[in-house]
Image (cartoon, rainbow, N blue to C red; front, top):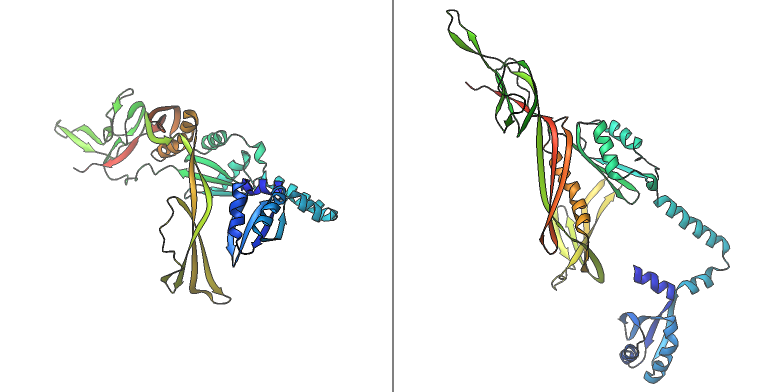
Length: 399
C-alpha cells in the first residue's frame, strides 16, 4: 500500500514494449539502474511500469534494442492535477468528501454488545453511554478503556468481566456474566453449606444449622462451613441428631491466578503480491473443486474466502453457490516489543480467564501482575487477583 502511494507521488507510466526482443530492453534497463515493476507478457509484447523521470533514460536503450514503446496510461500527482485543474467543482467536492470521511472515522457509528444472556442489555448500553460509548461519540474524547471497564463493573456487579475493542468506527463490547453460584436445594431437604473453593473466612452468618468454622480459618474446596446436623436431647435425655436445611452466608478472602506465555514481538505479514485462487462449486450440498492449482501452497500465506449464493425473488436460495478462496502469499516479519507492553497485553486475557471462575457479587480487593522471561522472545505472565466473595454452596446430606 505504501509503495503504491509513493509511486503515485513520484509519477509513473504504464508502457507496452513490442518488437523483436523486448526482453533485451528490460535486461539492459535493469543493468543501468532504470527501475521497472510489474513486468508481464501480453501476447508478443511486454507490459511494465516505469517512473516518468526514468523514461528519458530508457530512450537510449530503446534505440539500441530497436523496440517500440507505446505509453498506455499515465499515473501520478502531476498528471492528476493537470487533468482536473480546470474542474474546480470536482476538486472541491473531492476535498469535502475526503474531509467528511476523515471526520467520520474519528467517531463511533456502531456499538456491538456480545456475550449477554441473562443480564439487562439495556442497562449495559446505558452504562456504556454514560462512559462515552454510544453512536456518534468522538473517539478522541473517550476515557481510557481500562477506566470504562472498571466503572461499568463497579455499577453492575452481575458482570464479571467486560472489555471494549475499537475496530475502526465500531466499538465491540465483550461481556462475561458471572457463573451461577450453585443449584438451589429445596428448603425441605437437609443439606450442609460447603466451600466452593479455597480461602480464609472473613465473616460467617448462620441462619439455620451449626457453624463448622470461624473467622480466620483457612478452608479448601468441599470443607463444611455450616453443618445441617445439629444435636438435640431425646425424650429420655439421650442425645440424638437432627438434620436441617442449613442456611447462611460465608464471605471469605480468596485468591485466583492465571498465567500465559506472551510473545515479545508483533508479527507483520506483508503480502508479496502472489495469489492462488481456489474455486469450489456447491450444488445441493455436494462440493466440486474447480480451477484448483496443482502446485504446492506457499510457505506462508493468508486465506480470504468469499461465498456467493444464487438466490431468486420469491424463491430464496436455489441450492447453488460458488466459494472463492484466495491464498495470499505473505512475508512475515517480527517487530520487537517491550516486556512491559507484552505483559499489559496479556493482562486482559488473564483477567477474562479469572472472571469466569468467580461467584456472584465477588469484590476485587487487589491485583498483581508478574512476568519472567522464558526464552529470547517469550515471557510468562502471571496475574493474581484477590477478592472477597461468598464461597458457601449447598450440598445435600446423603445419609
